[in-house]
Length: 488
Image (cartoon, rainbow, N blue to C red; front, side):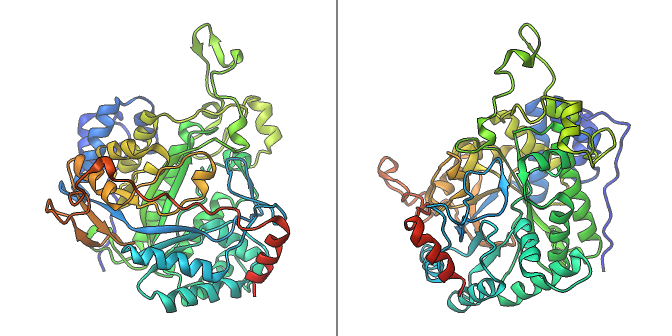
């Protein structure tokens, strides 16, 4: 077994030291959280991007950048959580609440397979009406009909609610999670997506993720998945009430738990190992439309946000954020105690710009030196910022977007097909390649006439088929019957 060794840290160096950045890019040094925060705050954008791109090229080479053909299937929008950033969730008795029946899900998978898709990303609200048998029967049904489709499903908050809903045996959260996850794995679950990561800091998570699991439970869920040999991803949603130190703290926790997974593994090429680990990290900015949090004023919109005429004061999130995730060394403060210290916390949002997004993504490539793939978030930022992200440390453009319900509920809707994704990658200076969930290549699209983008003769007439969004299925009275029927 190979011994997993950590790159050395050099805390005495400043974040803008060229030698440090070169060593980090080469994999010969590791940023400390303090250096990561300093880089995020003040390193020139082009320097941060250049270092992230260099690191990406060390891991992925100069030629290929990837994408996957999969489909997001949100099987229910009924959810017990009340996250203030979410426009998707519904209560069970809302007129537009839904739970898809199994045949509807099979039909969606069949449509994916018809266009050459290899994976489904299946997540939903946390619906207490669905028993464990509903999930295991669904997974077995998918695998029996589509044995070649990879099932990437059920994020950590869903698993934590499974523990609450199903009351599995076990004397610890880890044991209970393992009991549930083994049954889902045996029924056909292949890997676990990183949804519900948001921001790990307690004071932020309590404010925006009402009813959602805390960071410790999220990370424990992924640890159990890794110990069972599953690959997972990690995510971060930023650009709302958090401070910059909260972003770095979030990445730091992911890095520490990835170290833990890799340390108990036989490390192989490209960071592969067994048992499982995080394969990818994807971050994206908060989308505000139709969400409760989106109604909070922007930072700088009110006179009291200014420390002096023409100069913004300190953002409340930055005043509270600590690199260790606490507030002045404490992590058990109530919301009321937090507001006593910084009354403006949570009452302003600092939306992320394109440059802020690129800075954050570039830092994730440099700081998360033990994670193989960094995904560009074109779904939230738009196709061309997603394309630029390939020069800021991203190696993957994510998915052909057949269907999306969560982000589009918050007012952001982009639709790309395979040809457009390939063109974006090629125009950025790379060769597009389709990959699977483990980032193995399925096909490389060299500059030949049969490549998806080069086969398009007239781009002015090329339009991607409209992205599917799960419409309200039936009136409120019938929705309840559909939900009950789907549990049988």
